[in-house]
Length: 297
View (tube, rainbow, N blue to C red):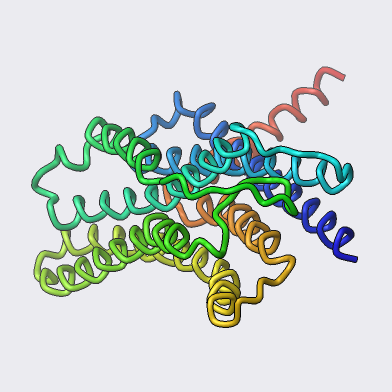
């Protein structure tokens, strides 16, 4: 039963990580393909950065569970080598980049609302430099706490490694989330005190709506990770590790990445406008083509 459950969860992880990868690469390609008609501004640049992080993570998560499924089907498999540890490191770098990419979007809104007079802070070049720094930080912050889980055929941070797991959770999840929340609260406070400047107030309200959506996305990912946190706390209190705990942990991550790839597109006003424009253009061209074909025939 345990092997069957492991195989089913491995397949589910492969499916959801594939969905997240395909949706993300499809939307990213859509943005790049239409960059001539709709040049990529700073907001779209930050969104592309988020999708690159999701693509990067989903691809590596798919590879990891490809090894895991192979190990379940062929029990004598053994993957305790340098690539196993390097791959675990790469996956956590990807997860870190996703959360920090949303923190970067939050900072961009902060610059637009609070420091709007300093246009350089929210310029394309400046934010592009921030993106490079974000990726460098993601590679630096992830420390080597990984170990080979022989029952799961991949490397990861063990639930028994309290220090490693606590530091990783704080760096990847709680750090950028708490900073984003603080920025959001500060912007709300600021917006309430400039209602007399009508034009600036309306612009800030739009940024505030986008920022609120970013916070909702981050909070949704944290909620999906909540069962894993509960199981970890239960393990710390009782010393009992649920056999499917690691599989459930990564399954929730793969589901959240699939949801995130769709939600990021829906909640981005610039991307929605681009999609609506292309949809209307397609609907206008289609009747013309049909009428032309009828005339030729």
